[in-house]
Length: 287
Image (cartoon, rainbow, N blue to C red):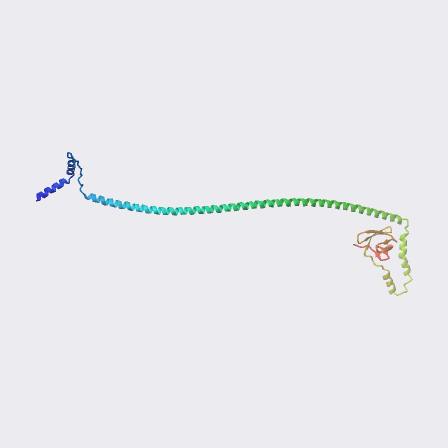
């Protein structure tokens, strides 16, 4: 029994060897005459390595599936991120467009403002030119008016000088004429002296009267001073008088003075000459 088992075991071992399997395959490959022959390959014996390969294949498949799943998730995440990026890009583009539109509006507004400023500047320049022209014309007219006024004033001064010269010449001629008329009659001065001495002769027989009476007579004999006329000079019996309007007037004895009356005498009282008239006495005055 033991020998048979050993023999069987040896056969099984030989039959399972590669050489036996190759021999069996060759014999089986010989075709029979007249019959088709199907080649049958012996079944390969399963070894422990085959089981390990299947497990490895399974693990590899699982790993591949897991990798595919991870790749799909990553792709989905990438796509979602890409979608977010596209949305952000679109938002940025929209913001850029809005900013560009705003900047364009600002540029247009600045352009309009600049155009308005140019128009205002041109208008101001035109106004300044107009005012400058008007001012130049006014200055020209003022210069002409001033020149005309100066010319008229010069003519007036010249005319006044001629008139004054004519008046002075006439006054000089009148003085010379009166001097010539007064020269042949030198007795005029003693007559005035006689007029002055006549009251003295009358006063001589009056010492018997009281002292109050002569004082009253002296007060009554003193004529008032005429303030509107002033005596400026006396020469050859002729008195040169001046009124408040600075007008000169020559008067001799017996001549009428405007507003005063007839000249009674031209005499010297103390150190001053006076002109005695019916209205009063004309004395030298400082005005």
